[in-house]
Structures are given as structure tokens and as C-alpha cells.
Length: 298
Length: 196
Image (cartoon, rainbow over all chains, first blue to last red; front, top):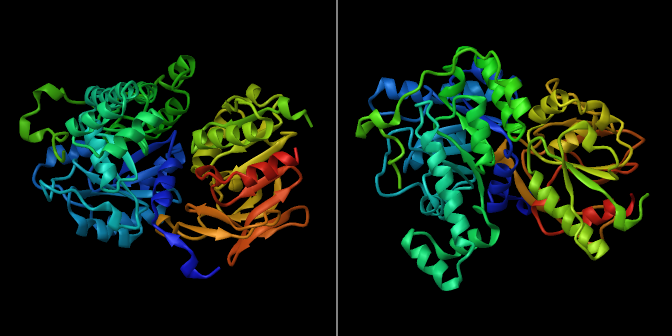
């Protein structure tokens, strides 16, 4: 087979990668040891970071892409896909992670935005992207920019699932509404939510987003993960919830089991036993406005 | 085998692109039988009983291995009397040997498989490939795909690229490096159903 006959980085190849993650748990890790624990527990991928979101909150200052040496160390440690986060709009950080060989890039509100007007033009990359969204309009704008996967934002680093629930319910509910609409109404709705009409029509036809949609931002227990799956998530990202818990390896395994058996209360009860304490968590209503991450990047 | 209209197909639904496999098999069956025929998700040992065919989807083979153990599915899968249609991670699981000790394969197709043989996601690709039994090329999507670097005498290679075999058949089983379930071309599904 000649090299010129192979097509790399197509929409199908990018969205296909996201499809292979479905029904899985993607775990935040900050070093090779954590990455190995995550892989052993059954994670479908790891997110290579310098700090987990709760520690990013604590540290304050400008949060940037992780040190490439750390990302490379994590890539070498595991055989599952490795993802990395870049600042919203920072296409050079994205080029750097692509050059390192990460399998997917998260253009993430957890880091300090580099551009308050534009997200990255993700169609220009071979590597697929995942982006956060709070509602259908945000999700479809990101897909239109080339995102191959969406995750609901939640409120990262809080260990509080309330925003994740709000965002998943918003997206699923908005799609359910579309399904009763005729062409003119869909077109009007597209205008109202500032999304391309063809993507709105596609959602109405499919009854879901046209790409894989994970839940993120506040999942701290197996029950939280199962809740998000029952609300319609294709899988979950768990950030601070694993490695800031008392027993990370057990918590990681339990969350993988909970996602697989999200509709079986007996198994959920069993896997939730004796895990020690979950991460401490924050009340999202007491966060000062400049510490709220979900409003970044609309 | 069962009469076409009684044929029962399941998809191993532990992790991966399960709904894509369900859709593809439902389309292939309805084209064959002329009526809608449900394909069932399989997560528990008892759900395998009575199936004529099972799809093992693409996903992460390390994750799926762990969930097979956890759900007590190893023996029922290894002794499955019907045909298995396996893509990507599924191909890894059907092998007799895998290059990575983290994956314990089921040993149903006589081949040694290398995971992520083309490289990482950056090296994932689409291409038209020739497949034995199909009269024109098949548009195949390879995503962090495995290949069979060694195929034993019991198995038959249906397609190969320069680094190894990408479609391998043994008795009723069909192991593919790529993902026909992501597209609309269902000729490989038909080829598989034909032999059941």
C-alpha cells in the first residue's frame, strides 16, 4: 500500500477514535505511576496533567499546558491512549502536544484561556480534539470548529456533581425538544442558540449529538459516574476524584465497574463499599466569580 | 445453523463502539431477511447462551480484558459455539497470542497480534484495501489498529498490508483490524452471516 493512498486525520478517523472510548472512564493523572494505576484499574485513556483541577484551583495564577517532559513520561508508561489539555485558543500548545504524540487534545476551560474570542480551528489538526460545553449551542459550535468529541463541563476540581448534572440535562433536554420541531422551527432554534442549522437538524434526526459526549467536572464517586451514565453520557472523565481520594486504586476500579453496570443497583452497591473517603469537595455556590471555570469559552 | 429468520446476534457491550455494531448488524440482518431483527447487547454470561453470532467491538483491549474477567465472561466466550465478528480490540481478544502481557486473549483465532501496530492516533488512517471474497476494494478505517504479524495454519488471511494481516478468518470467526461498523459498506457483515 502506498503512503499517498492513506488518509490521516479525517473526520471519520477522529470521530472514530472517540467512539472507541465509549462506555469508558478517562482519568486525570500527573505522573507515570498514576498512569499505570489508572491503566491497571481499567481506564480507557488517561489525561496527562501537571496538577489535577482541584490543585490547579488551589495553586491559582495562570494555568498552562503541562511540561512536555511529563506528558512524554506518561506516554511511555502506558499502552492506552494519552490525552493532554491546552488553553482555549492556544493553537501552539496544541501543536506541541500533537508533536509529542498525544492521542487527543482537550481544549479546556480548566486552564486559563489564551483567547477570549476564538477557540482553536480544530479542523487544521490531524489529532482529534475534545471540548467542554454547558448546553447544546456551545456543543455544536465546538463541533463546527472541528471537535471530534464533547464533554459537558460541570465544574472541575470541586468534587461536586451538580453542574455536570445541569449541563448533561441541558444538552439532552434541548435535543429532545428539537425532535418535535419542523424545519422552520429548527432553523429558528439554530439562530437562537447560535449554532449551525445543519448540525441542529442532524441532532434532531439522530436524537443525540453527532459526536461522542462524555460527562466531566465534579464526578467523585461510583454513584456519581453511574448517575451521569443514566442521564445519557457516553462515558466519564474523572479528574481530581480519583487521585485525591483516600484509596485511588480502589476508587478507580470502582468507578470503572460503576460505568459498566450503571443500571444495576446491586453491583453499584457492591462496588461502592469500603472505598474510604472521596475527595473533600466544594460548594459551587460559594465560589468567587473569578474561580468559576465553566463560564470560560462560550 | 438456524434458519435466517431465527438468527440471533449479540454485541459484547462492556466498552467501545457497541451501538455502531448493533446498528450495522441490524441493517445487515434486515437487508438479508427483509424485516427488522433486533441485535442484543451482552454483558452477562447467561446472555451469551443461544446466540448464533457475537460481535466484539472496538475499544480499549486492556479495559475490555479486565471487564471480561470481572463479569465472568472468559469461559463462555472461549467456548462460544457460534461465529465471532471482531474489530480492532476485538481482533486482539480473539488471538492466541498478543505482544502485550496486559491483555489475555481468548485464543480462538490462530494468530499473534501486535497492538497499536501502526502507531498512535496521529498515525490512524482510512484506505481502500483489497479483501479476499469481495470483488472490489473495501474502504477501511484503522484507529490505533492492531495487525496479525503471524497467522497459523488453522487460520486464513483475507487481507494484508505491508506490516501484517488485517483480516483473518478461522472457522466461523472473522477478525478485522479496522472498523466496518463505522461506515455504510456491510459486505463483510454479509460475508460473515453467509457462513453461519
